[in-house]
Amino acid sequence: MELKQLEYFRAIVDAGTISGAARDLHMTQPPLSYQMKMLEEELQVPLFLRGTKKITLTEAGKTLYEQGGNLLMLSDLTKREVIKSSQAATLHIGMTPSTVSMMSDYLLRFAEKYPQVHFDVHEGSTFTLKDQLENRIIDLTTLRTPIVLNGCETRSLAKESLLVMASPDHPLFEGRTSIRLEELSEQRLILSHRYRKYMLSAFERAGLVCDIYFACEDARTAMTIAEKGMGIAILPSSMLKLSSCLKACPVSDADLSTEILLAWRKGRLPGEIQDFLGLWDEKN
Image 1 (cartoon, rainbow, N blue to C red):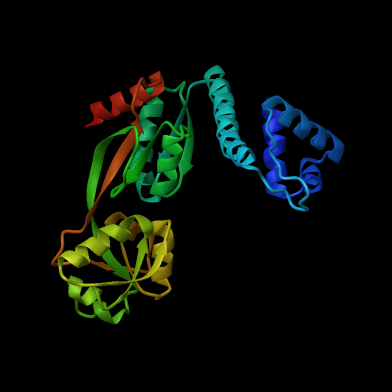
Image 2: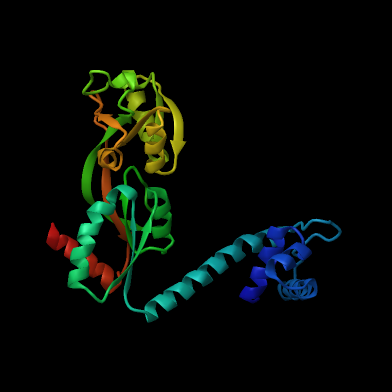
């Protein structure tokens, strides 16, 4: 069984027909049909139910589709790792939007000490970077709590408060320097997904319910929606400097906070990551 056959097989299933897959792959239909015949003969099981206009998989075909995807992903990962090992050392690092400033100062110091190391920076939400770290796309990353990691180690970089943010003319902010949870429970809230359970628990402990009006993946999106006046966002305090259109207040009767973590995979670390962590220790 060849990787190319798996690619053809998955393309046929995704397209729904052999003719459709042939168009997507920019090839003619007969070679595709022949490769599927050879694949079934090698595995000694039928992969498709015959007699249907649209591709329908047998149970064996469903298993091959799922496992074949894993094999192709592993093959692609292996290719990248081999290419990476033959090139100059590159540090593949992830940064959440609110930690770019913190990390850029440190990256400058690291670059001065290790000029031979190159950087490949991935920016994204905590959940996106978590997946990239666990799938070995990046070497280490900043993340925000709350987050659950598999097979990774972390160290705490900073802790900051979660603040209530909205447009300056929002009536809730009139003459106020802080907001109570009970007042927030009556407002339309804007949250990034990772704070959803955290905030629901905070309200539940106070015997309150809340209206999560807008939930999104990225804190920058939550900030933009709050700027439009669609509700009240709850965001890390460092996000405030990214907007000139928001006013912020703390929550007076709840300790709402988030922690910035530096995370990397467990196990033997490449030299450039060891150097990175070692220099961070020197800084702190």
